Length: 166
Image (cartoon, rainbow, N blue to C red; front, side):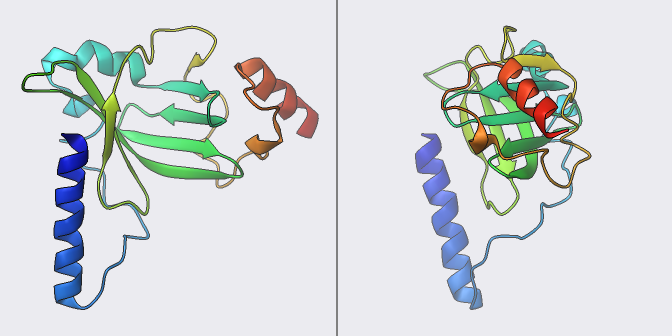
């Protein structure tokens, strides 16, 4: 359903762009909409999930990436040799399939991407409190995550490489 909605919204955006004579994704993020992103946008039914995500840093092993979720709804994704900025929000799924979605809107994107929240934020080696790599205040990451071994599965590997480059 999310794909259908995304396609519908994307098609509408392209159609409007063609009618206006140009199609381009925004180069900068729109101003933060506190009604859609972050803790202030969380409905009571998903507030516990929002608190599990807010002010946390996550490390993924599939694509090597580190992401910090600020409580105000901003997200900072360290992937490769750049930090991509955006917004995060958690929303209950409605209809036949219940559950909770986490949605991201990154700079340069026109529509938010949503996926099931699952057990993200439940703890473990791939979650840390706060913003230990200062992604929210950096203009560039400390090093290229692609320099790490494939499937480097914990913050220990990220930290060890960080100590080497300091």
